[in-house]
Structures are given as structure tokens and as C-alpha cells.
Amino acid sequence: MNFRMIHENYNVSDLDKAMDFYKKALGLEEKRRKTAPDGSFIIVFMGNKESDFELELTWLRDHPQKYDLGECEFHLAFRTPDFEAAHKLHSEMGCICFENPSMGLYFIQDPDGYWFEILPEKQNNK
Image 1 (spheres, one colour):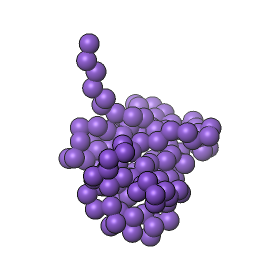
Image 2 (cartoon, helix red, strand yellow; image 1 turned 90 degrees about the horizontal axis):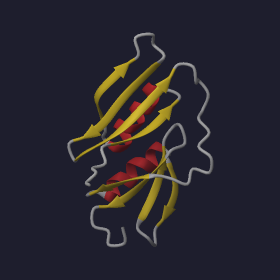
Image 3 (cartoon, helix red, strand yellow; image 1 turned 90 degrees about the vertical axis):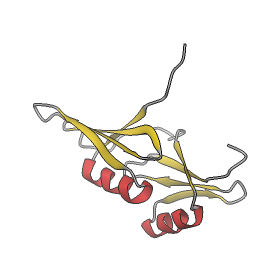
Image 4 (tube, helix red, strand yellow; image 1 turned 45 degrees about the horizontal axis):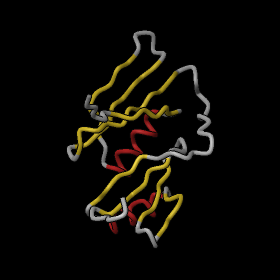
């Protein structure tokens, strides 16, 4: 039996703010969306041409507060061919939450507290 990963879901408290963050920080664009007829939820799938994998953002009308992410011991990783430019952008955005120069990586945090690992294109340890 074979399986292919297709998306990961993150619930967000402010859909527009989250989408703006992902566009600016990671170059993700809206690919499609589903809106509940009664307006109770909006699901937006974001992605890019580099991969078929998508980030599914879910906004729930009846959950306006921030989500409890526990100890946030999970993350999604991205590789970039221009690590220095990415680091500069993320520094300017103020979204770098952890750096490990000895491992050659850092993490950014979105407006809801989700972490994303940023790796250079050629990384032997991951």
C-alpha cells in the first residue's frame, strides 16, 4: 500500500492575516477555497509551484480566540535555494523565533504560533 502526503491543516484565528503571512514569508498562494453556506467556516488551500503539498488553513467563525498549541512541539519544514535572502526577509518581518547556526537552520512563527523550519537547499543532516 502506498500513501502520498497531500496537505497539512492549521486552524487560524484571522484568515486574512495568516494568508498575508504565508504569502510574504513563504511565497504561498491561494490555490482554492471552500466556504460553508452558513458562513461558519472557510478553508483555504495554499501552495506553490515547487511542490504539490498544500497548507490547509481553516477559519472557524465560532472560534475567535487564539488556538492552544500546547508546547508547540511540531513544525513543517521548508527548503530554500536562497537561505540568506530568506533569513533577511524573515528577520525584517520579525518572525524568527529560534535559530541554530551550528545546524544551519532557523524557525519562523506565524501569527497563530505555528513554527516552520527553514533549511538551505543543500542540507545533509535532514
